[in-house]
Image 1 (cartoon, rainbow, N blue to C red):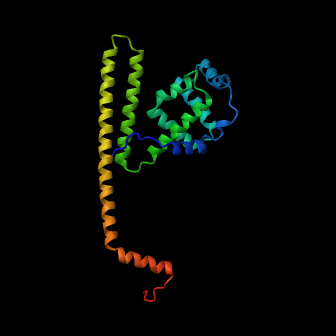
Image 2: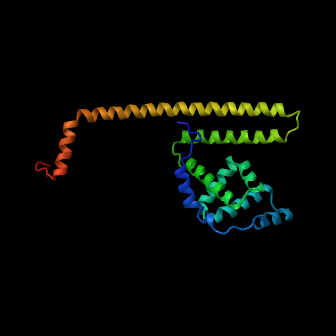
Image 3: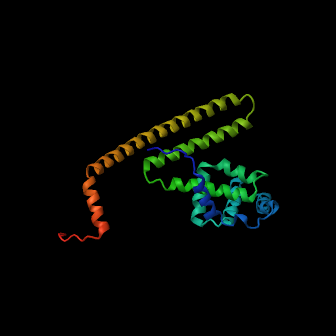
Length: 218
């Protein structure tokens, strides 16, 4: 069954923030201190912007107490599905260290959800959705940066991508409804069977609660 982005429940997110964000309330380096390693590396011309972005993300992730395995999972997810989000996070003047750390934990949660999908078809569908969603974000950026004459073509490309994403979401919702119907039918069958065996079930529970030993056990 295909899986699309679902609403994350608040208490689950809070739980992950508590476990992973760790020292969110600890003393933070100033924006100047945060930017110093990146600025020095960029001035030296030794690394690309992507590398600089990842270096900033790594520094921030370490401040959360995130394990090496969690960091690898998060960075791999960002490279594949959230490259623009990552760059915007570290390049924005408003990218305060605390906000960046919280966002990294959120992305880790999304990456972990993907990694925990065992069914190959479901996982492939989820990965496809995320890939197309990333294409939509990239098209939107191209549109904002494009010359006026090029915008209609990019707008059409973006609309086509959004049409595809919408169709995938509808297909997922229908699949979920179908699965829910099957689950409900199984529960109804089980309830009917229990109702038919009421006397037997009640007698067995009575025997257990009274501590009666079955003398005729094999």
